[in-house]
Length: 594
Image (cartoon, rainbow, N blue to C red; front, top):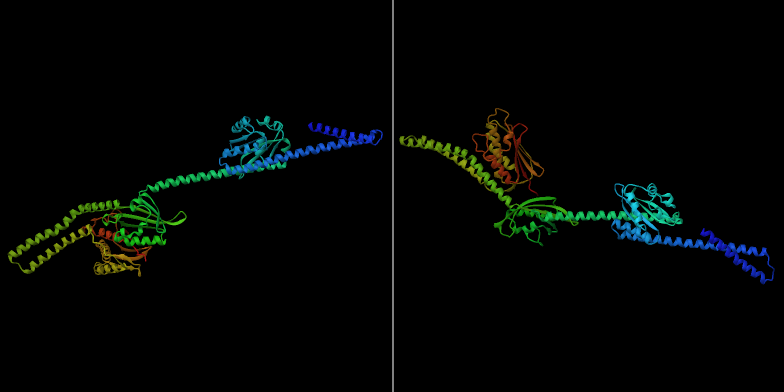
């Protein structure tokens, strides 16, 4: 109506203006008034006035549209700036709505977001104030409005040019004489919410306007994703810090000394390590050989060299260390070292545990066990000694009678031989007990284990042959060398062969013993196999106990001493039933690293 009135007035103004000009021109020319000549200028003036009115109207609309688009573009720039500033989702959404309305690009704007269960739970608005609460409550309760339903069902923008007629929205009355654009927001093929803005009706069908609204929606989606990533990063960082704090607390209060070595320098150590070896800065302990027991220096030097050269994955070593340089107050240290990466650098993680109390308890238990074992066998020792002592007393009485009756020297000599035999038996029993209670220190040398095996076989060959026992050997040639006490290893193999022969004493035939040496991984293995009755399940765990025996004429110390000797060689001695049904004793001793 306003456009029609304005057009009429412009036409009238043009007609009057051109009519006056025409009348003045005719009068000045002295020509009489002619309606035909007067009508045409008036018509042209009216048309010209109407054209000027239309041009002004379009120019005004263009300026208004240009001004509005500039406001929207400014809003988009402000939204992009907001993305980099706001890290809270609610503040970000409210900031966007405020920008869209504050810049006067739109009358009002509102955003609603869906949660993981596709329920509406987050809202932001500007320009609507309390009127928006009805819409938010309706959506929260699972209700839906027409514009939202249409927007959520399609990817393109939904235009509502008559909200009061086309939409059942509680905000329809607030949208009087305006239109609205609604668009769903989607990320990775999942709808996350909706954006709605209101504007003048003549703008809702503008392609540029719709494109700008879509761009704002894309910026909101990007901003929400950025905030989500930032929150995830912060949560991960907080979790990492909490985990690191908890781990550091655990390490700092550990009973095990922990340190990290980089370039032969300790870059970290916990409280227990500081208690053992002093505060930083210091060189790593494996380089301070003056404080290490002389017998342990070589193996610590080897470990230290392996650490320095990086030729380790994981190494363990036990050594004795004097924290204050006083060898009278040594502590036992169990050390484990392996390679790690610490702060992007190749490093060595060293764990050290003070084993002194454990070693003391171990020695105490060993002595208690030894004493208990001696107590258990006391009766057996008394029996072993009482028999030859009774014989000695009898022979002494006999000797006294021979002297009283002036018997021949031959009988006297025979009595003396029996006395010496009984005395040797007593000495043998006492020596075995002493060997068990305090074994001699091994005299280690680097040698091939086949050497003491051959000596033991030579010593038993004749006896075995007389007993009808076939002895076979399968000794691997060119075995790697071991750290051995040749005499003790010979004693162990000799004892095992003799035990095998004793086990087959009552057997009539098929009596066999086989001695095998070989390399298994990094160990030399010696197996003594026989075809005797074998070892029962009940006795399998007892055969190495001191003074345990199944023979009536044995003290049961032999296998216990053998086990102790092999343990002193850093090896193991095990028993199982052989493929022949007899016993199989297996010795394993580590090879010397070359």
